[in-house]
Length: 487
Image (cartoon, rainbow, N blue to C red; front, side, top):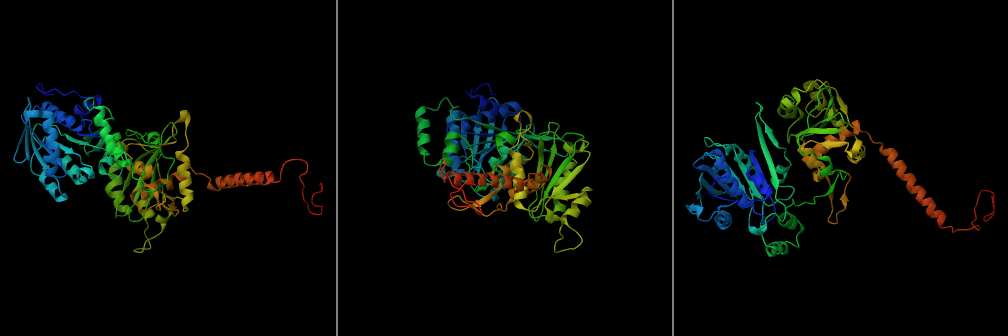
């Protein structure tokens, strides 16, 4: 870091500041020093690139919020080293390796064009999630996507996109970003774009007083969602319905890293059709765990487009191409074997068979014959208590579906409405998993129903017998005998 500036950082802040990843994402409760840490990373990156000055952009939802919030925080951290100009649209940070910043707000998606001109060495997105009580509308996903392409354009710079924020709710794009793997993207030539997310824990900022923490707690004590985000530093859960897969536990089933494809072992592709086709790729590992490696969905397209634009490029990537997979099994929605209205000779299943040189297997039709097997499998373990099913960090859509995105609709009292899940993107991914798991790990729903019925009947008989009383005076009635007599 620049030798003329000293920052007293916590372990989490230090890891964020010195991370070598291209995308660095920092979340934490209010008052835990996220902006302080963001400034430190700006200067550390200038020192790393040895640029005088480093060209940077600091972006918020509106320029007004930069003036009334961000600029004040920056001045508190930097003092007279922060020189603002042009109505807080320019910032120059005086340091051994100085930083020259453009500061602007993105008031609507059209404002994204502001990013297309300058050549930046780093871009900082500040508070991209909405904070309604502070009149912060947040930043759209398009700003993040464009920032990836613009950060690192300055000659001699290393690409750096940094994000600092309070946690969002579970449906915001920054929460989805947290779930993305370290290898955020692997280009056609093998170049890897990396991403790391850091979480500052409540209490890490030793300079925040107990009274300041108590005031923060008092502000959000009546709102569980805001308490989670601003006090605990956790993602706020949106209760959108009842999960189809209550046995799924992210801590147990979701890996924090991309799991390898094992060579010389069969792989599976699970399919769901209609106008939002999805494909999930899985494989048993040598330990006997069913590993879900990848998942893809294509909204408003067909199976042919999904295979050509997403699946085949993935299968040709080094991840699969060099693993000598001996065979594939394709399992999916049985309706994919039915021709559509446009032709009587072609079906989605035939397209899969022709393009992938495979045989399509139909999964079960009935809803409970798909859902019971997947929930049963999620509840099972193999040796040493390890879960039977594990989700690789590269299969983010499956993780999002199983943790609650795939859900039943509920009424105002929280009671389930209907027997099938809400139709959304998660539903297509969940259904694909249901078809595949039902074939690979069948669960006899009828036997389970019979067992439960026997238990209910046995309990009813015991209750009825108990109602007759206890002792030798109990009477029985048999055909042809007198009531109260002995058989």
